[in-house]
Amino acid sequence: MRNDLGELAAFAAVAGERSFTRAAGRLGVSQSALSHTVRGLERRLGLQLLARTTRSVAPTAAGAALLEDLAPALERIERSLAEAQQRRERPAGRIRLILSRTAAQLVLLPKLAQFARAYPEIVLDVTTSNDPADLVAGRYDAGVQIGEFIQRDMIAVRVSRDVRLAVVGSPEYFRSHKIPRTPRDLKDHACIGFRFSSGLYRWEFEKGRRAMTVSPQGPVSFDDPDLVIRAVLRGMGIGTAMEATLAPLIAKGRLIQVLEEWCPTFPGFFLFYPSRRNQPAALTALIQALRLKE
Image (cartoon, rainbow, N blue to C red; front, side, top):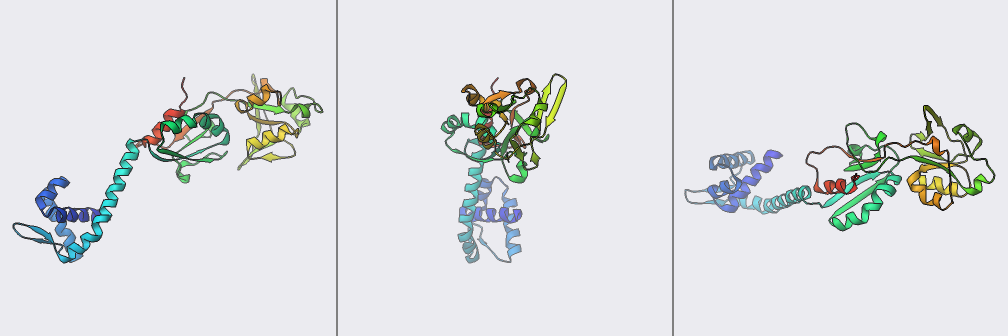
């Protein structure tokens, strides 16, 4: 197919210019090489496409019929290649991005309006998922995730400061339940679970050299962190979410944070993508917009 396209383009150039010399100059090849290419096409098709004299070159009837269909197709291919080149050089086009809902809330949404104003020709096609993402299999251009979930062969760019989980309950809940002082106390509480597709997230705690994990036991679990907190606000039990997303509710007294000294910080969110080679300008623009500024 690759050879066919080259031969057809060579034929179209000669037929359009009505000259091997002018066509060779336009294509940047030698006249003899161009003549050899066209002869090869004619030999494979078993048709004479160009009538040649010492003074002129013109399409035969068969050549003219082929050129009528061929010229628009070659123009479309050339236009598509030009548009692809522009996408690499000019920030434009569609970027398929996958990230968790928490990352969308903390990383993307605060910068989205400014990014859209700066790059009106870029369209972000956003998918949210809490699970580790395979960019290549899912045909995504980039993703945003907690660093520990990112495959090692990916290029990762930090887009948030360190984060930590907050363990919270509502004032209503704690009016009838003792506030837990250590992770072991959680066995006496209704714990609202957060679930990945691979299973329930185990709450991880650390204090000094002591580390503990707790499997939450309670009336319900969700695969959406927002629903976890909605259930907590209704007094159903204790739940966890990123501290930064809960700060306004904690400040207003709608949530009570517990076990703070047991919740360590850990590296935050990173934007990741497969390769720097031939990176589209639109993706470069997104990386620069989301990159954490020290």
